[in-house]
Amino acid sequence: NAGVTQTPKFQVLKTGQSMTLQCAQDMNHEYMSWYRQDPGMGLRLIHYSVGAGITDQGEVPNGYNVSRSTTEDFPLRLLSAAPSQTSVYFCASRYQNRGSPLHFGNGTRLTVT
Amino acid sequence: DQQVKQNSPSLSVQEGRISILNCDYTNSMFDYFLWYKKYPAEGPTFLISISSIKDKNEDGRFTVFLNKSAKHLSLHIVPSQPGDSAVYFCAASAAYNFNKFYFGSGTKLNVKP
Image 1 (cartoon, rainbow over the protein chains, first blue to last red):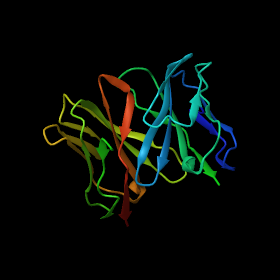
Image 2 (image 1 turned 180 degrees about the vertical axis):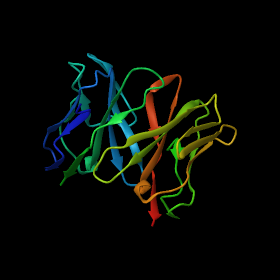
Image 3 (image 1 turned 45 degrees about the vertical axis):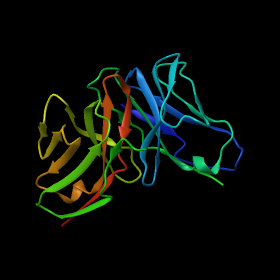
């Protein structure tokens, strides 16, 4: 059981470049989400999805796009990277019930120069 | 403005003693709280949770206390072990949108042998 898998582990982008961070889970979780972790700020929710075809915004959605075409995958797209998007990104999933905790991937460290 | 705050960035404790990690929240609608533990280069892993209908929840060496009137929760680890050295995040969600979790900025616990 792989759990939540994120690729790549590390990425360096130049300002204005685009890229997609991949996230896949094999636990048949309905809910998937993306967080960013910045020093002194904890984890902040970017976007989340409660099922295929359904996405919604979190606390810090600007500059990021998501889509959910399958239950397993939830990619995060940066259309035009900015230095402010330098961060560690975590994907998390869970069953869609109140008592179910989030299961996190190991993160993608992104640097935008 | 952060709705969940961990005001101690770090804590150092001797092995075998009690570790107490604190967390405050501002949103009175939060009714479900979780603690996560994070090792370097890994994603956060779920530790323990508590619902607002309880004021205490135990799981082995870990106990979470909730004081709703003070909007405060704490995680007690007894006895502390060197393997407990990690960053601990508290998180909260509200019934009106339990798809959004709000995280604190984390407390780095160092348990000295």
